[in-house]
Image 1: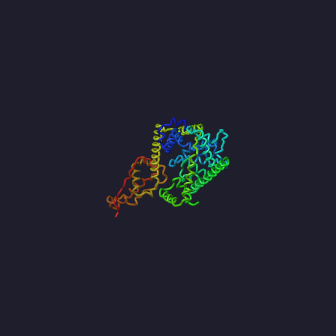
Image 2: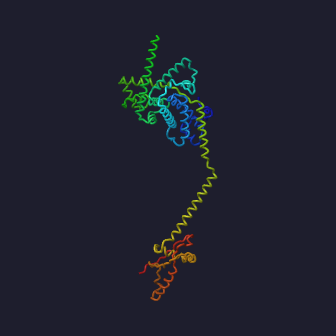
Length: 215
Length: 210
């Protein structure tokens, strides 16, 4: 669901770059410019946070905290020469990592039944009316399996995978964001893919064994 | 980890230069294991397309927008536009300040110029000052009343030279007595009153005594 205010956002804002929208908001307090920025990036930011922490309630808090910082610090901290989304992403990433470090544990997002909202991860996904119930179930299973495997990755590898997937962030930027060298970031991605492949293989083997036992 | 180990990732993520890509493709053609590794990673990476895109709940979105709106309103309040009338007031104040400052500086400078002692003045300056004193004798008397010590001015450089008029010895002695009497009247100026008006120095010239 996009923002309700998006209906009222003038079409001219949709044609503007992030840089111009940010300038409009900073200089004139243009709320429509900020709404358009939100519309463009909120899903990626929220998905990243959600996939890292695995809980809707916590993701909501971190998302809100991120944007509180964005709004209050945009005038002082943000340098217009850099990409706005990269700056926001750094705030979101730091808030997420702070939370994870406080928790000192990794969250299994595939089995995360959110006690606050009585939902799990896939209850939050948009409806796909065109997909049949069976296909939906299969898709959900595949996604569930994918998320389960991703949650099993070490935090550093998971960060790189998520930043690359949701932001298509160049490895140079990922390296800067995570305070490592480019080679380390590339290495983490490589190991993440190797580990994921092993996990998928193991799962496949298990399914085959189950099938053989039933047969 | 070797740099070459990351080349598969750089190739997959399209982070290679075209020339590097070409080299990588050639390497894959010649090394079957490398080709298998890259294709295996490509397959695994393609599974990430299944990662969900989740939107924040609407109440969170609205809350953020409200916060942004409040912040913008607060900013607008603190940055009130400059009223044109204020501009003129500020300009007038600045002009007045500059004028007053300039006047003070000018007056202060003029007052200080008179302070140096007679011995420090050049002959031309001395004569001009004293000529001015003669012109405004009345004012000088007022100022000189406060001056405790007055030294006579002596024309050490023979600026005043009336040789032609006093040829004989008697006339010379008369001239000297006149000169002595006249110089006795000269007084140092401590606080001149006439320095508000611009005074051009009168330069006396004369030929040197042979």
